[in-house]
Image 1: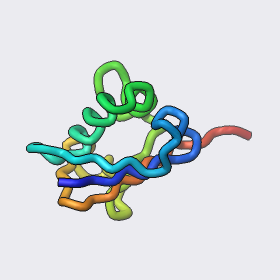
Image 2: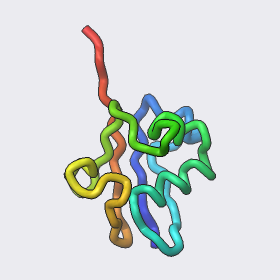
Image 3: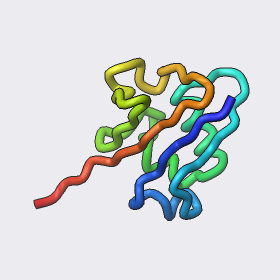
Image 4: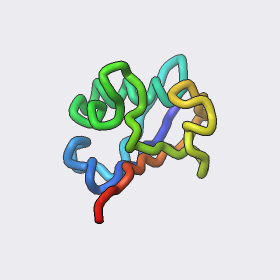
Length: 94
């Protein structure tokens, strides 16, 4: 199964400059499985998405079909073939 992950500009240097990363997953197709694959392919990117316990960082939002995965099943959210995830880090400042 193939999943696309759209990478925001601020995180692209940690994904080899890619705007979109396409992953082929075997078996368990969840957001957590996508992040595990990202860790293998782009280790520096994963550290910016999850904390030391493997949980999604507070300032990172991930959307599947317009829904924040926090409102679904978090990292356990199942993904259909061809799913597209959008990563949006929160921006603070003033």
